[in-house]
Image (cartoon, rainbow, N blue to C red):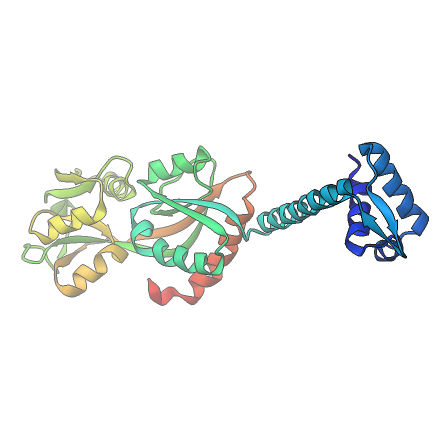
Length: 300
C-alpha cells in the first residue's frame, strides 16, 4: 500500500474535505484527488463519496481511516522512542562495579541519575576487579566503576577521585595507632579478599616491591565488610580503602596502623571499552556523573 497516498487520504478523512486537506498539506486539490483515486484503485474499493461541499467516508473508507490513524500514531511513537534512545533519555544502562563503589557510591549516584532520567532502565552488578572487567569486555556491561589500580587491556579508565588504603587492626592490637616497619606488619595474620581483588593484589605488590615476605592468610573473604567485621571482632589485620573503614575508625571499632614509608593511593575510576562507541544512555551517564560528582564530594 502506498503510504504517501494513505497519508493524504487520512488528512482528507480528518478534514472531511479535499479542499481543506489540500490547504493543510500545501498541495493542489487535483494532486490530492489523484492520490485518493490511486489509493482506491490499489485497494479496489471506493473510499470517499461527495457530500455537499465536502466528502463522506464509505464503509471501506471508515475502516481504512481508522487503521491508518493507528498506523501513523504508531509511526510517531516509534520516532519519539528512537529519538529518546538517540538522546540517551531512554534505553538500558548496565553498570558493573567493584565492592566499594557498589556499596558506598553507586546507590547514591544511580538513584539521583534515575530521578533525573526516569526513562532509562538501570542495572548494577558487582564483583571483584577481574570479574568486572570481564563483564565490560564481554559486552555484559556498558560501563564499569572500579576501585584500585587494576589494569585490563582494551579498557579506557578515567579517575574520578583518589581514595587511600589503610592498614586496620582490632582496637586492642599491639600495633593500634603506632608507626611500625612494613616487615613487622607483614608478620601479622591478615584477612584477605579472594583472588581477583585489587586490595589483595596491592598488598602482594607492596611486599614484592619492598622485598618483604607476604603475610600469612589468616582468613579469606570475598566481601569487604565481612572482613572488616572480623577485624572488629578481634582477629587479624587488613588493608582496606579509607572510604570503607572511616566510619569504623571514627567509632573506635578498629584502629589504624601507620606503616613506615607506605602511603597507598586508591583511585576510583570510570571505565569503558576502548575503540567502542558508547550507547547514548552510557554517554549521558558519563556526561552527568562528572559535574554531579564535583558538586557532591561531601557525600564521599
